[in-house]
Length: 154
Image (tube, rainbow, N blue to C red):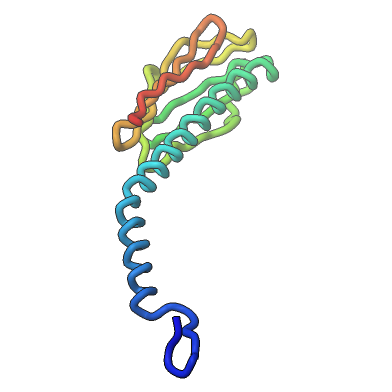
């Protein structure tokens, strides 16, 4: 575009820049709930994976230490703790995992034992968060297999 005396205009006008900023703000504002929901789902799936690995770790510790490992689930404080138990040795804390503040943790039993032969007491761990995200982790007793059933809304 030619202006007076043959000088070309460079850049954008203030009005054009403001218009682009308004359009970007509107698009981001409309997508904010989607981003928030995706972050919540990612956090939930991450916590679910941590609990799964923690239970697998408990089974592995029982086998490698050749000892009974006791798992305690404290729903009120959202904690899972592993203890090594032994005859005359007392109880030793092996590891601990805390669920996220926005999550609810529960189980079918408050205490579960993992045995050196790879078996365990059969039980379920429940994890839930807002927006209908729920999952249940099943642990079979005879072989200690861990399975996840997730009921998160898409």
